[in-house]
Image (cartoon, rainbow, N blue to C red; front, side, top):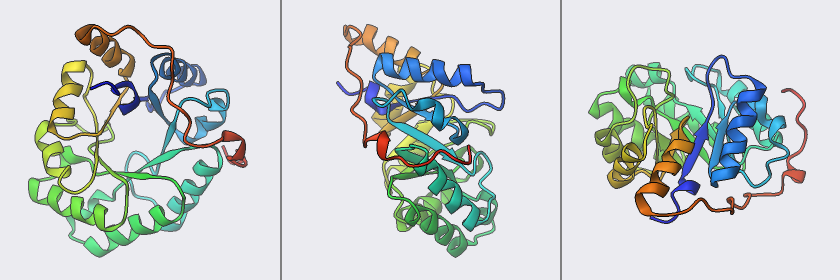
Length: 234
């Protein structure tokens, strides 16, 4: 597995996140060749990091916004330079078995932007049957990935959840993945990406475990940030 750093989204999303925290995350992502996952207000801080592919979260962490407002947030994040978006599924509607509403909401958000959208399904709060349902709904909505968790609910990514979700779409395992051993288990279960605030530690441990030295190359940007558009609104 030679592409581990490019499959890690180094993450900083806590409620006390500062601009300095964002820059540290981006510096580490650049150093180790990782991606980054940041809040949308921080996207203008990333203009000097064109080689770091950026994911921005929207309607985070509860997924209870109105469809129009979430679509607008998605468009603003795209305009501000996001290469991918992580949105949150409305878990209350899912548990109420309002499947059409869940699918239609995600479909509209996905269609509103020309970038991949991952859907966070908060797996620790779901039964296996609900995981199966939401996996199919998100796939039907043409999302690019399923993401296990926001990290704001009790519990995180598990091998079992990844195995279920990966039947439907590529999976980003997020929540409680803090070491290379954790990440390797998720990859073996079928995850394509890892979201972690300790991405630097994961890559360091992977390098040590595989005898690799720290490389100089960072991932190529998915698009030219000069074409990103306005950052107004953040």
